[in-house]
Amino acid sequence: QVQLVESGGGSVETGGSLRLSCVVSGMSHASKCMAWFRQSPGKEREGVATFYTGVIVNGGDREIYADSVKGRFIISQDDDTNTVYLQMHNLTPEDTVMYYCAARYGSCRGYGGRWAAHSMFTNWGQGTQVTVSS
Image (cartoon, rainbow, N blue to C red; front, side, top):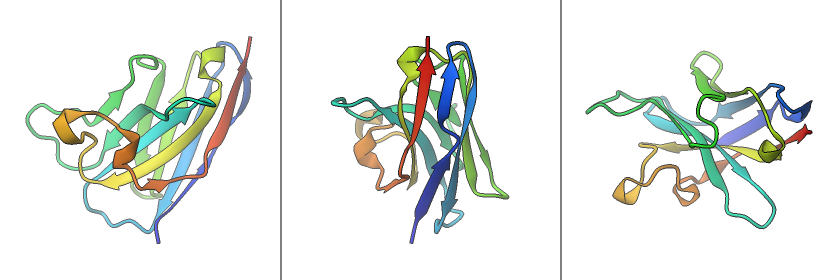
């Protein structure tokens, strides 16, 4: 049984930093896409960052970020502890949402090369809230 357990959310002031963690269990060592999504009430869940664990070919990227977080967020993975991290810097009130960890076997791109469509992922964590005050 696959389980993803997030932690690390909380409240910070504008310009602050937080690191989210996601411990993954029940998945094999086959190539996987590890992802962080976020969702505001009433809005579709959107991809924040993805990390591909497999062999990179044809100039592909191991890490991909949404434009809104490029240069501020860093996704990483620790194979030894099966943990995926999202280090978030220079946070703004617009980053105040629930963050979710997700995982799937295979690429981080789906049909037509679409990146991080939430429908591609069947394994999800319970979410962790990030609140940034102005």
